[in-house]
Image (tube, rainbow, N blue to C red; front, side, top):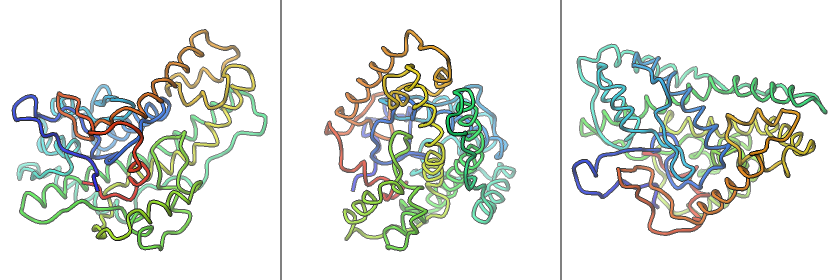
Length: 351
C-alpha cells in the first residue's frame, strides 16, 4: 500500500528535498479546509518552537512551513539554514524533513544526545496530556464570549500537541540513527492503530484517529470509517509499533475533537447574525481571521473569500495530490480525483 513517495528526480539541486510533511502528516491526505490548514500551521509553528527549545536548537523567527494545495509542509531550506550552525542541528533538520532516512547524531553533540535520551524516557512515561474536557461557553453566550472560549480551549490543547511534536522528532532521530548503524527501523504504526487492527481499541481512542481537519469528524463520531479501514487492511502483514511515532497526528486529531464544539458554536452564532450564509462557511476562512466572526457586522470581503476558498477546496479534491516529500519540482501522485486511501491513512505505517 502506498504511504507516500520519495522523489525520483535526478540528483543535484532539482533532486534536493524542498518541503516535507513526512514527519507529522504522512500518507495519503485530502486537502484540508482553509481553517484546518491554517490552524494546523499555528499548532506546528508553536510545537516546533517548543521542540527545538527543548533540544537546545535555534528558534525560527517565522514558521518554517509552506502550504501546498491545502496541505501543510515543513520547509526544508528554511530548517537547514536555521539549524546549520548548531551542534547536531543538521541531524535535527534532516529528521524533521526526512524521518524515513538515515543519519547519526554527531559524537560532538553531547548536549543534544543527553536531551534526547531524557525526553524519550519522559515522553514514554509522563507525556503532557490533553485536558479531559474544555470549559464550554454558556448557552446563548455573546459572540465575544464564544471567541474567548475558543481561544482558551486552543491554549489548553497546544501544550500536549507541542509535546507530541517533540515525541515524533525524538522518534525520527532515534530511528534514523538506528538505520545509520545498519539496524532495522521499518515504517511503524502507532499503538492506537495497532489496537484497532487487532480489534482491541477502546471506543474512546477513536477520537485520536481521523483526518487532521476540524471540518471532518474523528472516527469516534463515525466509527464505521474505523471498521471499513480495518477491513480494507485485513490480510496485510502487521507492521511494528513505535510508542512515539505518529503521536502528533493523533494528539492533534483528538485536540480538534475537543475544540469542535467551540468552533461550531462560534460559526452558528455568526450564521444566525448574518455574518455567514451558513455555519459551514467558517471552515473556509483562515484561522487568523476567525475572530471576525465575533464582530457585530459582516465584513465586505467575507462572502467573496468564502466562495473562492470553497471553490479552491473542491477543485483540489479532484486534482492530483502532491507527494509528501517534494523537491523543487512540485511532484504529484499519478492519478487525480478523490482517493480511497484517504480513509486508511490513520492505520498506515509511518516512515
